[in-house]
Image (cartoon, rainbow, N blue to C red):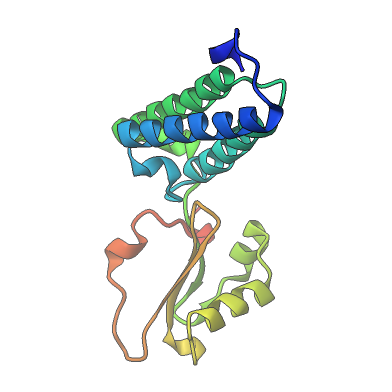
Length: 177
C-alpha cells in the first residue's frame, strides 16, 4: 500500500484498509460533487456508476493497484463527469454531441414499429413494459419513451386525459426526421 510504504501489512489487513480508504474517498467525492454522480439521469451518469464500481473493486482487491492510484482514478472520473455535466448544461451543442435524445416508441395507443426497429426494442419488450406499468388497454397509453438511460417510460391514463406537451418536449419521433 503506497500510503504506508514503510509498514508491512497482512494481505487481508491491506484489503480492509484499502476498502476503508477508498470508501471514505468515495463519500468525500460524492459530498463535494453531489449525488448526481450516481444518478441515472443520462447515459454518462450510468456509465460513471459502473466505472466507479469497477475501480472501487479493483482498488480494494488488486495487489497491483494502490489506494492512491484508485483515489486518483475515481477522482478523475468525478471531475470528467462534473465537467461534462457543466458543459451539457451551458451549451446546446455539447448536449447534442454527448447525449442521445429520448425516442418515442408508442403514441396514443399506437406502436411505432419503425422506432422499435431503430431502437432495437422488440414488441415483446414493449408489451412487457406496458404490463409492468399496469396498462390494461392499449388505448390507455398516451406515450412510451425510450429514455437516454435505456429505461422505458410508459405514460398512461384510464380516462380521456390529454398528455401535456411539455412531457414530450425533448423526445424525438422518427417520422419528424
